[in-house]
Length: 109
Image (tube, rainbow, N blue to C red):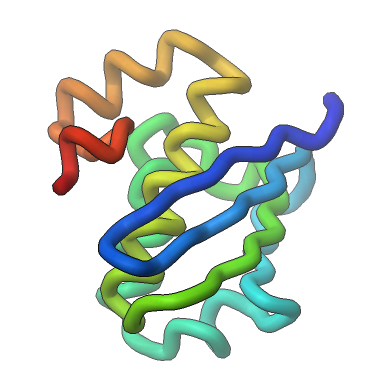
């Protein structure tokens, strides 16, 4: 599988995500997820799309985050991960819409 990239925006935060097959490691701005987002709630927000499609542990994610605060960054990253997963499997879009997880920027702002 090649590297899939996607972008997500929330408020003034921008997330660029690069997704490839792997062991479930999430690296944000060259830091581990738990180091970048020490709050368990924000970690849950980031992992939400992976858990919904039962892909937690299947993909390695590298992300670049810029702008905004912690909450806006976590939500922008969630949107970018959801978009990348839809590029991998288009059927996942229905899962995200059914759970009211924002897939597009218009549905979350």
